[in-house]
Amino acid sequence: MKTEFYFWEKDLRKLINSWDLIPGAPSDEFDSLNHTILSHLNRGEADKYKKFNVLRIELITYYGLLPNDNDI
Image 1 (tube, one colour):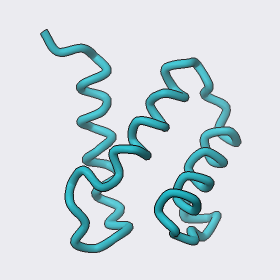
Image 2: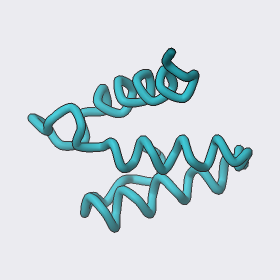
Image 3: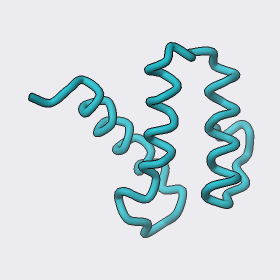
Image 4: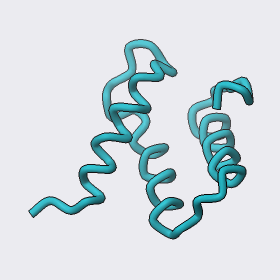
C-alpha cells in the first residue's frame, strides 16, 4: 500500500519539473529538493519564510542556480 508521502512526493516532483529549472534535466534531477521540502513539511515547519530560505539555499548550494527571490 502506497503511503500519502508517496503521492505528495509524486505530485511535488511534477510541480518542480514544471518549473523547468534546468532544461532537458532528467525527471529525478530535483528529487533531493523534493525530499528536502517534504521533510520540512512533514516536521510541521510550515512557516513561509523558512520554506523560502530552504528553497533558496538548496537551489544555490546544491544546483548552483541563482534564483531571483521573486521567482521562489
